[in-house]
Image (cartoon, rainbow, N blue to C red):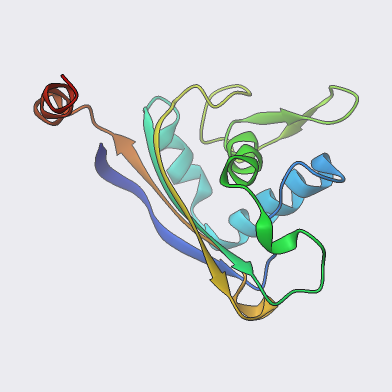
Length: 153
């Protein structure tokens, strides 16, 4: 469950959300840069997130009027893969060389992401394309979990 908000929602527009298709390393670098441009206090955010289990709330805005084949049909899992890859301290290129990531998770995996709320919406132009992301500390609510478990019994 969502706990204390660590990064208030940032809105990225005029950016086509990327997937692992094509030049994956270039896609990750682009994503990292657009996020960094919106977070002036990245060092403070890193201090807050590095040892925390995280909850991500992400909404992708996809242009359904595009002429690019498959551009508006992007799967959430593929969109999230790129996002997950840039959040840690490092990600790798095609030669398995380390590249600096956003540094919000130690090392180079997404193991500290415990829960994700992900959605996609369709928009009418490239100017509206992009994504919103909010990062919170993940909170395990045992009361809520017990209710869910009892529902499925």
